[in-house]
Length: 266
Image 1: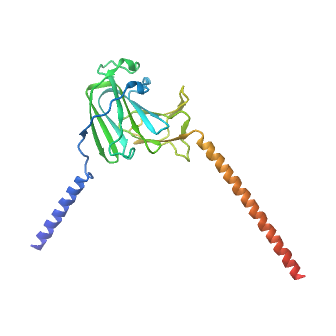
Image 2 (image 1 turned 60 degrees about the vertical axis):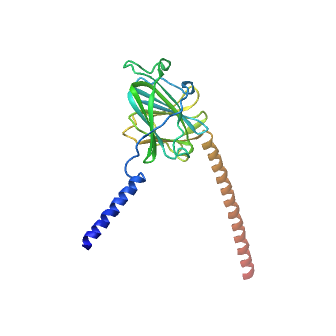
Image 3 (image 1 turned 90 degrees about the vertical axis):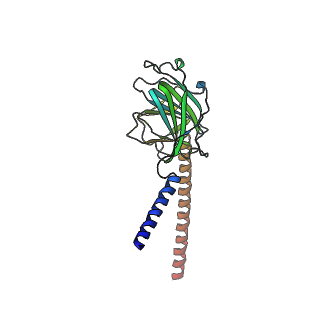
């Protein structure tokens, strides 16, 4: 009888723990919630044509005010997931907006002329779990074209969770750089680095997934490493001067003590 009661208590505790974990979201993901996203204008984005060797591409245009404009190129795609790390904004839901979806359902469509695409209708849902916010786009038919969006970034860095096998390009603001081992190394190391016609640094990663799970870029003003180097030199020179001064004073005191000891012996 006592054994059965203990067994029932253990079973009840187990059930309560499962319910508690399920209710707090620790087990499984919450069901996607339909959301309405604010639409934007295509003129607010740089819709570059895709390179010949790329079918899936996302380009992030970083700005000095710590906001991001992203343009994702899709090819014959029925749906798309956009991942934004939790903590990118102070609000519960990411401040993603200015959505632009341009494309065509034609199997012969290409990205060489973005102006030939038209607006595409879509349904969107939102979920937040396991350290990331997910915006899911559903299209009525597979689409070839562009999905552009903007969101705020507070940490002064880009942390992009990879959701598909794609090429990623990060365009830094003019006058900014990235990759200093002290200020923040690039993770992973990009496959190429170039300067565009506007003088901006462009970093490129090819065929990222499943080799890598994320891309992390910390960017800073190009002059910052030089300023830091000058500060280090000044501090080093000041430290060296101080050390020489104290060493000289110690040597003088030692000579005075030796002189006094010599006089006492006489």
